[in-house]
Amino acid sequence: MDVPFLDVRAGYFELREELDDAHRRVMLSGSYILGREVAAFEEEFAAFVGVRHCVSVGNGLDALALILRGLGIGDGDEVLVPANTFIGTWLAISAVRATPVPVEPDECTLNLAARNLAGALTPRTRAILPVHLYGQPADMQPILDFAQHHGLRVIEDAAQAHGASYRGRRAGALGDAAAFSFYPSKNLGCFGDGGAVTTNDAALADRVRQLRNYGSVQKYQHDLAGTNSRLDELQAAFLRVKLRALDRWNARRALHATHYQEALAGAPRLTLPGVARETDPAWHLFVIRHGDREALRKHLDESGVATLVHYPVPPHRSPAYCNTHGTTELPLAERLGREVLSLPVGPHQTPEQARAVTAAILRFQPDRR
Image 1 (spheres, rainbow, N blue to C red):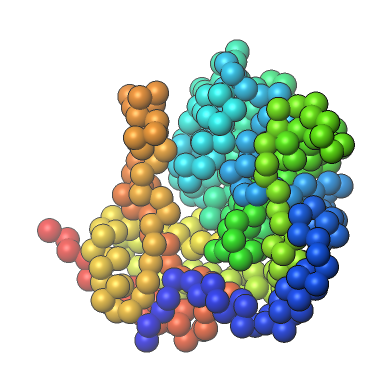
Image 2 (image 1 turned 90 degrees about the vertical axis):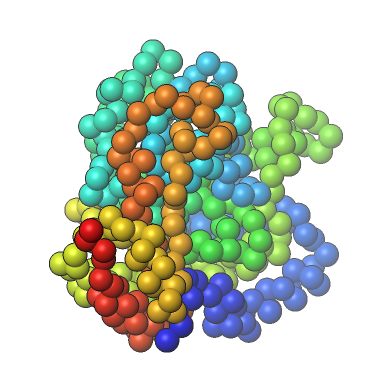
């Protein structure tokens, strides 16, 4: 049985009638930028997350960078950031001319470990940017406690955590502000690029709203050197439809994750993802670790199971950062880059496909030489 990693078309097929209606509604409206659909989506997504404000933007990277700008973080400042994450988290910090300072993760959850923050703190530290990696919420309370003690802001990278929760609260409502991505493969994805900022800080929301639109509140009056980063009406209309399906789609992901956890328990040389207490992951990705990752991946490919690696190169080892972080020793992040492997866990995967994945893994005979 062939098992694709993710079929992004399947969401359209399931919601085709509603999505086509949304398309026609926008096309007939004659309003395509910052109109009623964007305003409605922002209100609905804020309610879903459980915050007072949502500001939609062009993509997830812009969402992070605009939060940092909105908080006045920039040249000469430092931001504590996970050592293992998609490089976009780091790039947002660089975009505002601040410096990313990597912090090693917790080996169980692979999220930023609060116990490692103190060793990275300097007088220039202004913020902590935890990532809810793979859809698993970071253990936020000790991070928030550390930030409060040291007068730091906390910005969530929730790009992979749509619908995840921590201690009964949604990801995106846990820090000073949060950034979401609506890239098509996300749990809540549009049909192009898109992003959003969520926050309870009205002043920050107003500033981000201004920055995303050329620094303007009133047409042709530009009080800030802003940018152009706006979610368009069509994508907002599509996201409104898909938002109504998000919880049930996440529930399907969770069923596959539960099957994987149960069927693969005790598999040799394989480490399953840890789930922290009081968290409800969104299971954007189901990431295992294996000491012979490449051999396992080849075996799965030959068995018809598609896999991906998130992420093979930690940011500090990428050419983009080797000049500034090339001598930094982050052994756990580097080991994770050699071991992690993402299994298919999409909401339109069938139970039969999930069983085919685990059967193929259990047939794998690692070379013990």
